[in-house]
Image 1 (tube, rainbow over the protein chains, first blue to last red):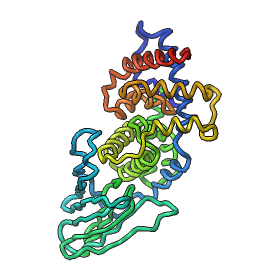
Image 2 (image 1 turned 45 degrees about the vertical axis):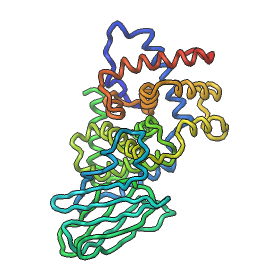
Image 3 (image 1 turned 90 degrees about the horizontal axis):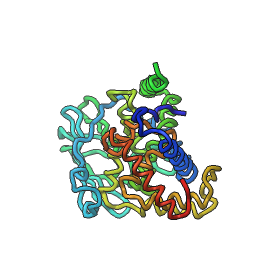
Amino acid sequence: MSDEAQGGEGGGDVTRGHDEQLDEELLARLRALATGHDPVPDDTVLAARSMLAHLRLDAELAELTLDSFEATEPAGVRSAALATRRLSFRAGDREVEIEVVTERDRRRLVGQCLPAGAVRVTVERPHRPEQPGPATTETDDLGRFALTVPTGPLRLRCVWSDGGAAVETAWVSV
Amino acid sequence: MTGTDLDRAAVAEDVLAASGGDQAAFDRLIERYAGLVWSVLRAHRLADADAQDVFQTTWLRLVEHLDRIREPRAVGGWLATTARHESLRVLRRGERSRPAAEEELDAIEDPGAGIEVDLVDADEAAALWAALEELDDRCRSLLRVLMADPPPAYEQVAAALDMPIGSIGPTRRRCLGRLREHLRTRGITA
């Protein structure tokens, strides 16, 4: 189906030939194995298709600028599970800071929207039939909020009461 | 224009169309790259629940970046990089469920779980998985990404594993050689 596979081949030098042919055959067997025994689950593909519904229409994207778990030691260090995870997002002069606290199978998000002010914060999660719709909360006058959410991907939509563009954070999995 | 150039032009068009809300274009991107993204998660040994989460997050990240990807033609590499980053996040979180390999082996032992493919019968499949598991991490993860369907371009493989594009060919050759040795001890010629 795709001819992209040719992308990095080394070209027709002397090392190509019989071995290369055997390698291709073995790889074809491995590919058939993966396709047969570890395919992308159908419902996972269907769920991915519905993600286009999350196109940002009227908000600015606040990019992830800090993920404290990204800054920790290499993979395999398990102590991170006990630590609080800090996330920062930024779009121009608007920032969203979140601490993620693990509470068994749920996550408590304690955060602040900056500049400080009264902000409506909405948690958006990918559409799944069994899940409730978005949860909304109002911050205090300093932009502070606390929410408890299920694990999985989410983003926050923040609308400042003093007007100005709404901001949506990048998607993160908590 | 080569076929690959045409392919990439079509991909760039789909990225542009999807950023305007074209569902068919987005579906085509998923069809083309779902196998690649999944292979990256498995190469990082994510088990089912984590893999599904990261798969979802990777496509959500694409949706949020559709209008700001610098090289729409190279969106495959972008997806592979994103899938790697998101996988590493999960690994650093350090609360994985059991390893994917175990689940894959279970699936093979359960005759109802896998779709049988003519090329690979159940015994051979179990032997191939077991032989893959005996490889070192570098080899196992490289081969798992190369097993993606459709076959990924080397620049996508490089992005998936953060390895230099020039080392993929030689590493692939070496790893397939090792795999062959493991298979031979199991009485399988390859």
